[in-house]
Length: 535
Image (cartoon, rainbow, N blue to C red; front, top):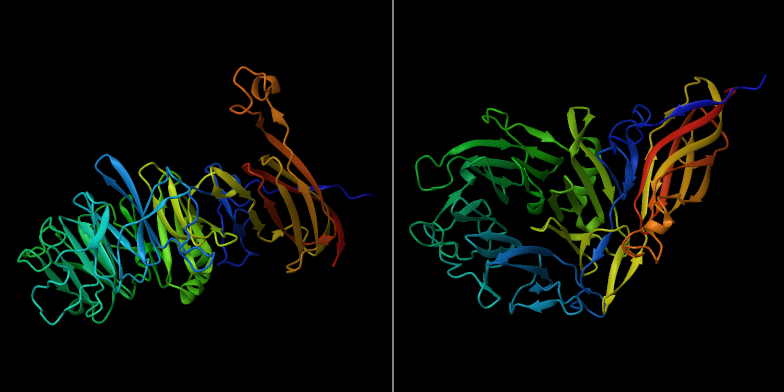
């Protein structure tokens, strides 16, 4: 008697994102073991990430034809105008996005050897610090950058002669700076509302060596009316920073054994504060009573992977993209960017954590700097030497004269090991059904793996060709009332049937999609199979 076709629905496929920490044989189908260049929407649908669209011509400041990476970026409101600056090589350049063929204007600096600036907005002015360099201030009237006035004037200790902080913060009426070469345990603060006055009676310093022992100050951030000093291995939190010379400017708490490995990973997210420690991305947050500081590991589902990456580099950039609800963590030197979806929490071994996916980029397009702008845009400085926005479904490179070239990128997902539920009986694989929305012209390959093998049993390739919905004349015809360019048919859901082969007791599916300029979303996946032999 012929065996009946059996059906297994994977309708929650990938809903909880990437998990490389747990045993893939024990996870449920809501997790993925590979999730590259994809995002997971609020509805749980798996889609391509957006593309990186260059806004300007790549800079030409490298040797030969190789442009230099964009090491740092900032958006600054100068009166009613927004201005943009980029640290590139040995200069800070002004960026004019209205002239994409000639966008980079030198601001006249000399003697600079790095591009890893931290820009500080304070009292309607703009400053910049970088380890090993005197701080800079922006002359809003002249449009130039200069060395900060009185930058070497100290109070209280004349033996310190070089003021070259690696990190700073403009908050609570002062600029706070730390990580100077001569004593990287000391935090300096400027005079009240005077960012260029460091040697006056209103300025001063705080020696954290008496608080946490020997450590190096990595970053400074505000937090619930307090100020947080991040060391490499410790965190110190102080109360009442509005007047650091008052008696109530006192130590609130020292968190020992947990610090920050990257200044630019520290990002305020609402009332929360995210930072990268040696063991992963962490959250510094308050209880509802705001009386304790518990720490939460947000990268729990990829902890070992994160630790390996940190062992290879501490050149890491972070940004919170508010309109997407995601925190991006880019390991610049390794071309790895992790995306933490803070809108959706998923289960882990120790409580809930954000949903995670991973992005990589081809041809030196990976992020080297990241900012979120007032216009609700994510601006990305690239290793390739250009600046781009997060939009469209191609990685687009600006050529010149208003023309651009589009490049496809590849999105990949891989399921956990799906138990076909027959115990010692192998199942004869028949078909996979995938319901996909949109993606016109995208090429998709399906690989399947059987019984824990690392080699794919076989591969099937097909092209997405959704059927347009609506009336073509109303939406897409050149003679239509609204024109062909502005309106186009809407591409709806379509079921794709992929024939499978071989037999298996457990099965893993890998889908590899190459973009063609349109978003594609995986809605549902199901497997058809028959009962086979005992083995």
